[in-house]
Length: 357
Image (cartoon, rainbow, N blue to C red; front, side, top):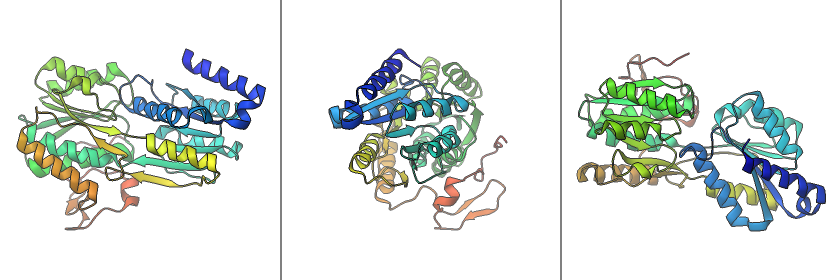
């Protein structure tokens, strides 16, 4: 727990002791899997928290704890927030799912929102973004920019969200470059700059001249920059400090509108348990600037793909698509249903790696 967080918790406890804050202020808590300075996933969730503070002013107080492991300690942190008077708690990592459900059962008057999970309760909502739409755009660009035809992918954990992203990127890279090959390294972490840098360097040594990542630090960007000729994409946040090259675009998670809307619902007394899964169209998934390091024709085709995804004219998983074993998953023109996507546990045809068990 950081000094800032401790101070925030102390201020919250003091407010509850006086009674004024409890009556007049809605308290919103955030549980983060990484540090707020990770430059990626947690950084963007924290930007959403700051947007809540700015939007509501003195009517809302926020507290947060960063770098909370996915396990028993998460349950302790959530319990502490609830005991200290939080009205709404956002738990911002998939691995917090069971802990969120457990703590919510103990505090039925507190509202909980769990990011990227699928378990709900009367006082637990779930929310996520269709990151796979952004991965499709990245794959489209990557497949045309690779010269070695080897694209490296740094994956975090073998959960549906990550597998979906790999599949979406591969399908759209393969569409524009039939010779493309994916090399995947599982880091088994969301945020570990040393591990992420090591994974990037191994992939570069294996011939990858494009690196995609589903981990949260900027370490792969720095490794690519040091290599000198490797393309990267920002993950979760813009990572624009590495633009115009090696970072040529990015997926940006914009949580602020959702956090503001859900906080307002608590204030208004209209909050209900819901499941939200939004993408490029509603703005929850943003695509960072495609830099001039990308040839103009590739940039134009990527922008056209973004527009088709935004309007709903095109779905990133549209058949014909086979599973890795060659069996038919989607017939020509068939669109994947959300249930299958939410539980995706298979690779598409053409990926030669195996999903860890």
